[in-house]
Length: 485
Picture: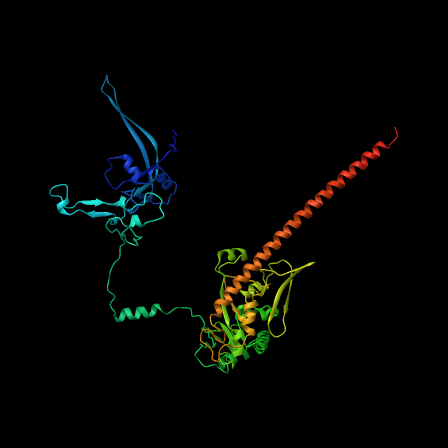
């Protein structure tokens, strides 16, 4: 004999209190809607709040656990004539999940005020409290909170944080004696079976107040001499770039080596042989040629850096910027524009803009792989990330051109401003943002005009096709009428 269990599900809640009012108990569990939402997920915890009408009431949570119980209804039937009793059982459904409140009940911090003993209403009961929760709430919308803040209400300051753990954890406290056996065991734990080869770096980091190194570390020069022929060719190209320009950012230097199609990691071993790194100051995060001290050369102000960040969410959305851009070498290996891109370098060591040729039109690609947007800012090269390090010589805006055309305003290099005037960083950042706003508005206007022109061309083309079809129909009808019977 086969029988099937009913498909109806029941859920058991081990309520941590004596229930005298079913409606009140359901309300403390979040109501029918809250309970149904909890039952719909197998991992959601059941929230119980003994004072649901209070926002400051801290709840306790019940943990779900799977179960295989059944809900059985038993009836006792008695025969009135014979007095025989018979028990009849019926399975109503299954219990797939049970909720148990095994956590600790935390302290409740609420708007409670202890009543003085002389004001207690009941004789002999000194532990009585008054609830002033209603006086804390703003019942109606208002623009002025002075009336609400001037109420004579006791101070109610709940804790800033509550613990996230509501169940006790077992922890065995034990003292760790520094015996010889323990010391030997501890030393063996640090002996790993595999050891990575030490990565030696001979790069020189020079702060603003430190002397300028004249030559590279001997080990760095020795490492260059032991490189394979292809890497020695790369070292020769880097040396040529440092002869043209004494200070480079890493992005600009990689772009200058784009014809070799190298990776970012390829120059890590070669750079310390030709330049030192300045981590801070007006030339922060720039590689400088050995023997060249920008702090004594006023003409080196064009190589000072400006840390620009696109903070406006509107500009970030229009430029389609992300938190971190791909590596320069990775952008050099692929062409996101889907066309042939030619790179043009200007005379004098500065790098040119990037153009994409698509038949008739010549347009600048942004954002694009194989672009100068990672280190240069001008009308055709916009930021490709939220934060970019520019050198002043690579920023083509009117304010910067005027700054560089003016005489050097200092006789001594400043640790913050370098050879530039006061607050030049702020002025340049504001100029870049203003140019971006203007250029984006011009691009949007041009795009809208192009879209309108395309729509007009489509309408005219469709109209010409319709007229042509009508003319063909008239010619056919005329031919039929001219035919003799």
